[in-house]
Amino acid sequence: MKEPIIVGIAGGTASGKTTLAKKIKEEFKDDVIILSHDFYYKSYSEFTKAEREKMNYDCPDAYETDLLIEQINSLREGKTIERPIYSYVERLREEETVTVKPAPIIIIEGLLVLENQKLLNLMDLKVFVDTDADLRLIRLLNRDTKERGTTVEYITEKYKSTLKPMHEKYIEPCKEKADIIINGNDSKEIDKVIEKIKELKN
Image (cartoon, rainbow, N blue to C red):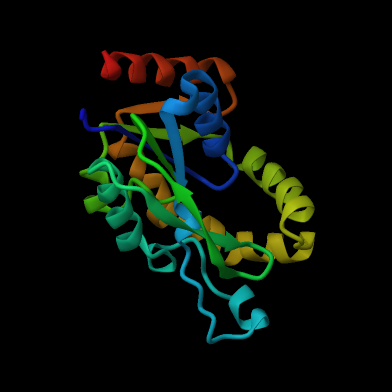
């Protein structure tokens, strides 16, 4: 069995990482599985919801990345995994899991997937989605108020206290590790990534 192609997609919050991953899935259909780094957020179930909401979720320590790496290696070996489900509303990992079977292309997407060297070493293609900070903030406000039950006040405070400084400290430097940097404002840039994956498949 041929080892799967592993594609890492990083970039700032609301930069278009998930959109890119979905477009790749649309192109290659059942040949693709998507693993979001967010699925592997630590649960912190020993804390109250109010305490969890104050935590920093934009730094490497917020993730159980070792579990993600372990599960990617299992998929590479042709094994089925039970990947976690994370609730953004409760800020907890749910008891249920999702069964994921091996596939020829594995997409790993998340803020910091290019930050961890062990994770980086697994990737055949590393992509950074570079999007204007103002546009990312607008998208973030729209997404999190509608989908994650947060308020504008909460988001703007988190943006100032953790999102922006963590972006500058951890995410922005990941550009240097990318094979491709695409403009997250330009949908045509997605074609560059798809063509590169096709080259890797052949």
